[in-house]
Image 1 (cartoon, rainbow, N blue to C red):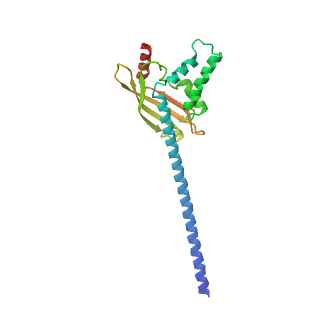
Image 2 (cartoon, rainbow, N blue to C red; image 1 turned 180 degrees about the vertical axis):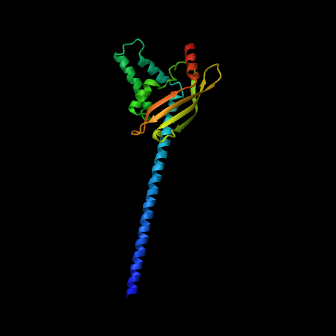
Image 3 (cartoon, rainbow, N blue to C red; image 1 turned 180 degrees about the horizontal axis):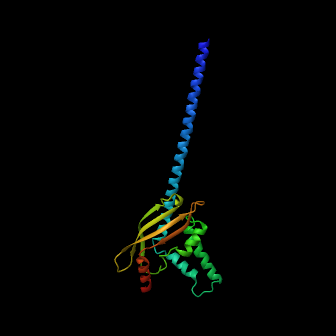
Length: 207
């Protein structure tokens, strides 16, 4: 009888050890799954951000965007009264067009800043005979942990105009994403060598 009880006790004890072991393995497995999900989420977020940047670059570095140029010219107004109904309507039309093309990528404040400082900067001479085309881009996330929402851009743009050989130009930029909204809050493009801007300006002056 004692041997029978001892056997039962031993079996129960072993079962408890096995259950405890399984429980620990389950917890460890859940921990690994959580870490894997976190890594996958971070990677998918980076991929989405890069796709967003690529979409904006396609808008910015292909053109000129004739419709934007016409709307921007009308919104600037020339000698028109800025308080006139017509002028206010022109501004509304421009803002509506910008929101239609860009609002999905930017925070509200980010788009306002971009529109006032850098939006369509290569499209001012829309009535000039030239074309810019985005050839390729390299987009890299910052390798600094505290700046993981920042990305650096290097793009190659081809400029063509009648009677001249096509030329390639490098454009650099920085993009900062809102950590709350997951949209762009700052988008900057510039050139170390301003030959692209200079050439477009020259073509515009000669038009």
